[in-house]
Amino acid sequence: MLETLRPALLCLALLLPSAASATDLMRFWDTPQKGGNSFNAAAPDKAYFDALAKTGATWVRLTFSKWKGEGRDFLLGDADGYRGLPAGDLARLRATLDAANAAGLKVVVTPLSLPGARWKQQNGGVFDDRLWSDPAFAKEAVAFWRDLAAALKDHPSIAAYNLLNEPAPEKTTGLAENGTTADRLAWQAEHDGGPRDLPRLYTQIIAAIRTVDPVTPVMVDGGYYANPRALAAWPHRLADDRVLYAFHMYEPYDATSAPNMKRKTPLRYPGVTTDYDGGRMTWDRKAVAGHIGAAFDWAKAEGLPPTRVVAAEFGCMRLWADCGTYLTDVMDAVEERGGHWAFYSFREDEWDGMDYELPERLKPGQFYWMSEEGKADALPRDGKLMDLLKARMRK
Image (cartoon, rainbow, N blue to C red):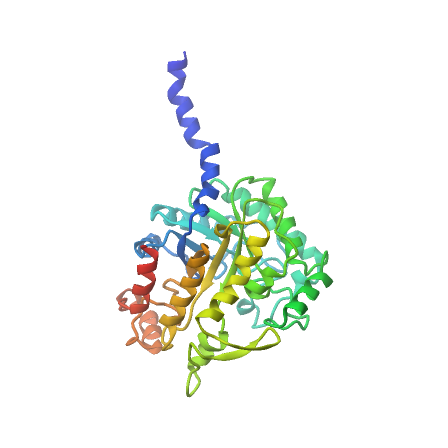
């Protein structure tokens, strides 16, 4: 009788997530992983993920929020009032996850919007503060993530749920983004237990996720657009043991971002000086490591290993003369501390500013013209900056 049932039992075992596979979800993050960000307007296909995998990337931070959905906001339906996951949107996301899985990539799914916090670029350029001021939207955010986790918990590509890209509950309160540490700590204490208390919101969302999915890791961005110093101001780590703590690195933003390229003489790195922590910071390799180190120092103090810290985004304008030097210093800083990283971004279909595969000789106008003419596949992809990133990912 047992021999008769053995094939059926084996098939059942293959269909159900085992304790070992559940453990593997966190085990993936026990060694430093390197990957890229996918922030495309159209859902990527398998060829896209194959190309990313060939760079040496092991994971991709995937946002779906730019995709055209059944409602105003993909997968949310409407950030003005969440009423459930649109079936067609969910099917498209699952198909995209299938493509990533076929390419051998792990995926961290990342919304740019939550109920009451529509992404600024989809909100008429206006920062949406409702999630941070109206508790009703927090309840909707909790419901959204409970539903999404229930829908995705068994998908083999999922490596983590990144609850919200670059939250900024501080934005409208007058707190300076890179102001003093004392001001940052005072702000956190003032808003403890209120709607702007980011760790509190995360705790509520994670509790809801765990009712339907007890094992998938969760990734959380620190406040003020995932600034590592905002994360370091949290009074304590979250209670859940399956959490990854993420920050983004574009500092000094005055130099790494698009506006710098419009200056008659762009700011240079190292050497650019900006306001920082109540004084002035001259940015160089040491300053970069110090800024990033705030997240790792906090994690260490909280008893967390460095593999629970993720530089989930970092980058600079590809045509900036100092981009290669800056990327190297950021990667060195993260790797010396033992964390994970993902560069921004891989083959973004609407913007070429941080597409490191594109060579310096390809000017932005050419990118947009070829894209509009349906010739994106013919874009040259021999950029030296991607060679730099590939060398680090393949180590």
